[in-house]
Image 1 (tube, protein in one colour):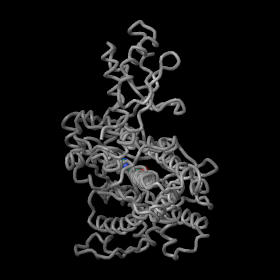
Image 2 (cartoon, protein in one colour; image 1 turned 30 degrees about the vertical axis):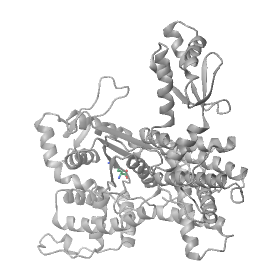
Image 3 (cartoon, protein in one colour; image 1 turned 120 degrees about the vertical axis):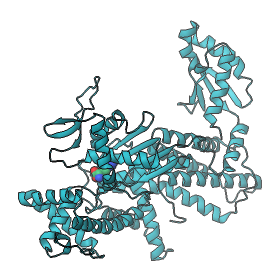
Length: 584
Ligand code: ARG
């Protein structure tokens, strides 16, 4: 369905043109003074310069034409030449009914869908998933859902950190504890055991112990580096052990991400590009992109107009080892080869901005990707504690994601406790959904790049701009709909009050908001929007006695309007990765 704002724009632009002005001056926006009008066009002011006429005269010219447009209720000229526009209730109501009958709520699927890859998650194998990875997962999941809703082909990749030093640390620690395992026997030619020599709980203890030791003990660090390098060069036993680490870790990660309702299409990692490394490095050398610098292999990616110096891209270290930059470049090589995407989006901590700038420049310069491929770095800010420092446990350690979810769930449970019509199981499921809504909405309602303070009490409040408030509104509607059967064949009729009209106007903007959240990669726009809709609905709810209304036409219209509101809220929530319970 064409967006309301586009329809109005086209009409007004036509009239500007008809009066001899450039179409562009007919640009209409949603009014920033909703008390005065619904939409406004300020083009006459801008046109005044070009046509050497007073803005008011221009506005008057166009006004004569606009008056006759059927879908405009009243048009007026305000101040120096602003054109204020209201649409008719008929137009609005028709639009709302069309939207209600459309399974995508008025959103058009893209006629020319793109293939978009989203690199989010970024968990590191063998290390516990911590809150630092929370934002990547939550934001990336929402961007994925929004893009997909608009009909694009979207591939989400977790891109695990599975090829770095932490693996070498685990391998050398396992060796210290169990030197007799066949993985460490250089003469062993047989099949390695199928069962991993550790459980996830053991693995979660092994890594921190190894990392602590390596920090204080040079030999241990050297061993870890050597093990990493041997693994990367293809040592048979280390590869077998690495596969165990990967399997045990990934099983746990899948559960963790599953608990968050975050689903990846690809469970690839840094290591997957290893099959392309030789080919890529040969290509880079053969085409003279690389140069040597203090023994390392680098590619100059600086540009003349750089405001700050951009260091060269590192392909290989002086000892021949690959780096984070190398695996990211080779992963692009792999992705272009396997999926030929139009766009690759990275949802990663904003502190990695320079790294990605180098990677993107390098990929373009070396023609690993063509000029049209769009790279998008969505760098997010830090989640801080109330002290303004990165969020920690009470003991000062890194908070595990699993623990965080439990904490927020318990917090919500306390608030829900006074309702004993639920079984313990139902209660748990409700608390999970409400808790996740608090966590996700609390995160997503901030602008992605901004740091924010994780304030559990605020996020889990049932009032204000929070996930639970939106869920509460959905549940309220569901409860009405349990009491009155919806007859979807009866229409929504013209609004009976300003409050009802405002609700309808807000609902009609759904398609516009999805598109703009997609274009700007800004889930916070969807948060803002569903909060507005929930607020409008609650006002509408308090203003009308829906269930006892005796005029059946009116009652059914209200019920259908509530049902549409529920659909809009639930779809909006789903695009944020949030589920609403039926009751709470
Ligand atoms: N594993 C990385 C980290 O924990 C994030 C990976 C982000 N994605 C990428 N393609 N580099 O910092």
